[in-house]
Length: 124
Image (cartoon, rainbow, N blue to C red):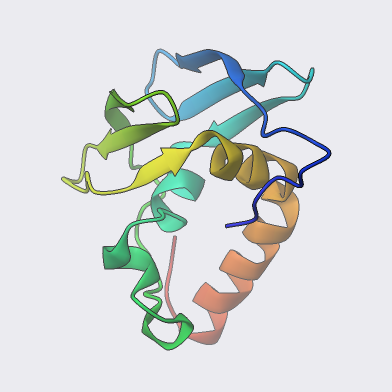
């Protein structure tokens, strides 16, 4: 996870809104940036140790989550939200800066994710 530089404070969310179908999280930040993050992207890039491992070599390729949805959002202090997914995954704590990073880098992350799935013969 990238950290904010000393000259630029971490973005602060002014709105978190889950779509009616529970498959998209809309995030608006106080710096004017706004992102729509698909549940599949959030699930496949969960910051949990279960997904990320404890080193880059341990990172797990999450697949088969095309239809995953968010069951709940649970505030974590004043710095993050824990997203509970309908497949039972509930250990990812998404900091505000990580949500901003996912939104900012979404296109590149999707491209890399789809390439990784294809290389491993896996499907979304």
